[in-house]
Length: 339
Image (cartoon, rainbow, N blue to C red; front, side):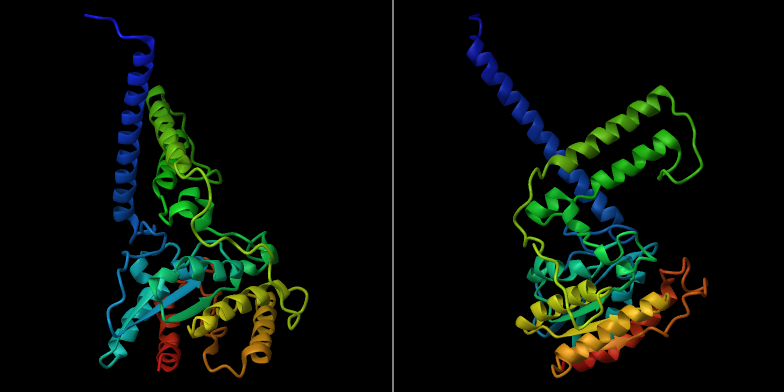
């Protein structure tokens, strides 16, 4: 048998590597989709990066609502069907006479008002009719070190999402599992630790390698609407809150330009700082958009006593009954603005 030339060996080797790599990528994608399916209701997001099952094209006659905010909209610590958007959808449909509502949960943990306009543009393909903005906590210095400089875009931290709109969850799951294998704890702040054996370290290493590979598949940004180059501001608010007010106003104006009415909702009060923030926001909305009937500000500041741990389990996030209470106060505003 004639020996293969060096060139052919190289060619066959490259073909083999390409085939193996391609199969590996397909297996990782399949695994990621499966993990999404297993976790999207319990604690995660679907393949497009929002909570609950993916929704398809909007049926005729349906009124589609998107609700944006941080982890309080996301429903941190709860399954997706116990989040505020899920309760709101059920209440709207129970109260509707011949109308069908869907409410999409676009909550993004840790994200503040800066992300509103970007998220509205990224998810414009959902063909939504009404926008609910529900966030102030993540722009408070008492809640997050980022405070008034919170420019986090939670979903866009994934290069795959920036490139394709697909949100990979496998790196997160594998990273957490490898952390548990190595330390006995899912996070560095926990005290429980144990010394892993050789086999355990090998398994953890494999998980971390797979997590790193899936994280790098996207490679580069692009595809979706870029984040604003300049942070908006509004001089109607004090210096402390002008960036927060500007981000909210920019998102509202973006939605109104596409004839999508907006409900801005003040969350239950956490502190004097939060009260001042919402007072600035409400005053700005009255001055800038008070004459536009497509914009509503709903003050839910005194709806829940956030010191009550039976309803606000950590002083910030609500239990299921608390989320349902918030949803009950949003039914009438949504019905009225959708007429």
